[in-house]
Image 1 (cartoon, rainbow, N blue to C red):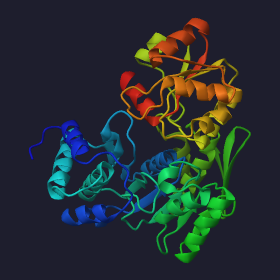
Image 2: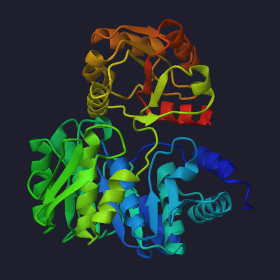
Image 3: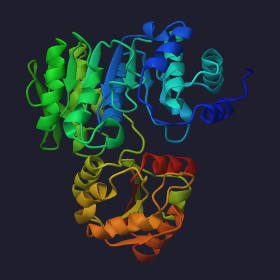
Image 4: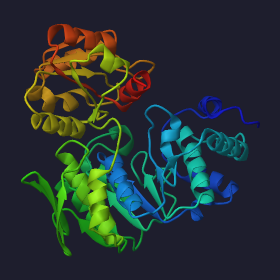
Length: 423
């Protein structure tokens, strides 16, 4: 197949291999074998699973490692604006020619055999990592853990961030079942860092680790992190660290930073690396302040934020972040998928919001209609209206409350559309 641009190849892959979720590892093993097992040749892996905080934790680990001069590959999903965001080679997003060539190669090797979009693109990432020199590979699980396409490696270290209810149709309808899927990344004898967990989830994770002889470094038992006098305090068996608060906004980021620092300390990194983890990390669409672009120009007097959280735990994180901000009328522009617990997401936000403006997510077939999102907000006590577009909602806010704080939220798909629209 000739190189015709990554967008065209990705579109063709979507046509041949729909973006469906079908959790199994057989297809991944088959394609990796056809590619010569690149997953066996990638730099040492840190594997990250969990419901919330995976991306932020990974971003902080990367910032800490790179501050010490290490070259770091990183794999994340989903992307926001462009697919290239998913694959970072030694600190730099994969180039267009490299991505196109890798996708061509994977499509050719797979032939007519059935495979999902996420599986074949994950294989492309492994191929890229195996062919590019680096010191570390950071792998973020796509969905679950046990049967996720990334779970074909034996890492140097596993991390499980907080587990909560999400993707119940695929992972199970109880916290224990979901935790069991996340715990599926634990490998025999490989240490696992465990973030804050509900007791039901922690019990499952610890039982899995014990069965596999995997040492556990658990929040509240082996390490802790908290805010004190405007600083972040971290403690483990090696002592205390007094650090700046994470530059990623929100009190929940302190615990994500704690997991990242635990990883860095396990790898023998010093306090300078831990400082870099909390001060240099960047992770878009997680309480990201928008400061330039067409939307900002449309509402220059408004304080504009963007967040992609979409489950009840995400709603709680946003609410706690808003509660700590200086008092200001706060409007949400919210669009969500029809697969999410919409009222569960909105309920924690009720006490922090002046009004919610519901929108449909542009170009997304699984969007919840704006009117349904509006009614869900009304049902939990949030004053809510619907709007045709984000721009229309923003114009309405400016007309009514020109000094408002506006948070565009509810979905990573909406966040991606905003980042593309806003340049």
